[in-house]
Every structure is written in C-alpha cells, then in structure tokens.
Length: 163
Image 1: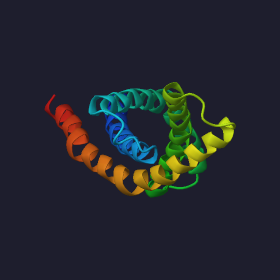
Image 2 (image 1 turned 60 degrees about the horizontal axis):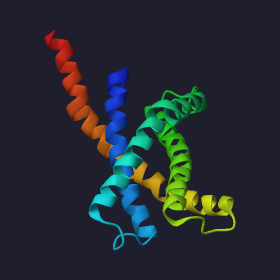
Image 3 (image 1 turned 120 degrees about the vertical axis):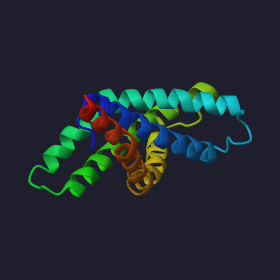
C-alpha cells in the first residue's frame, strides 16, 4: 500500500472521493433532498464535503487511526488484520467528524430542528456508520486498492526503474 507521502496523498484522494460521493448520495436520500436540491447544489455540497474529508483524512483522522491501528496490530504480521483495523479506525473517525460536519451544514440550511443536539448527532452518526463501514470494507477499500496498485503504484515503480 502507500509507502511515501505522495502515494498516501493519491490513495487518500481516491478513497475520499469514492466515500464522500456515496455518502453524499446516501445522505441526500436520508434527508429526502433529491427532488429539492439542484444539481449544482449537490455538486457544491459534494465538493465542500470532499475538501473537509481530505483535510480530516490527511491531518487528523488518518494519522490518529493509523497510530491506533498499528498499536492494536503490533503483535501480528497478517497484513489483512492491519488493513481491516486501519479501515475500521478510519471509518469510526471519519463518520464521527463528517456527521458533525453534516449536522452543522443541516443547521445552517434548516436551523435547529431538534431539542437534543446530542441525540440528533448519535442518530446521524449511527446511520452514517452502518453504511460507511461495509461501504469501506467491502466496496471502496478493494476498489481503491486495486486502482492504486494497478495505476499509481505501478506508475511510481516504473518512474523509479527508468531513472
């Protein structure tokens, strides 16, 4: 998987793009926004969410999730356990922060609609988490790893060999 900072950036960009795209569509569905939001509004929401997600991935959630995952898997050499642990830690962190982001955006557009922000956050977080975890582990993780190994890692290796 990614071994350099540049590879980590590419991997993160591809992963965030896929996850934010699917989770944005899922949240539009949950909020019954498909008929109410314009295409440009949807693209704008996606783009802003993508920027927030990539910043979280590169500077907050990613580093913390990797530290935790490496501590939890320190006694194993099984790469699959390490990958799954990193994925689970990433989903927990990203679902947590992106749910906060979603609530802030929702409150910005619709004002406060609940008496309990904590209960609303727990509701949003749980709905996002139960979709994001299988999406990450079963669909996006394998697809992004395939794309990364096939096109980016190969390209990086070819550049090194040619020089």
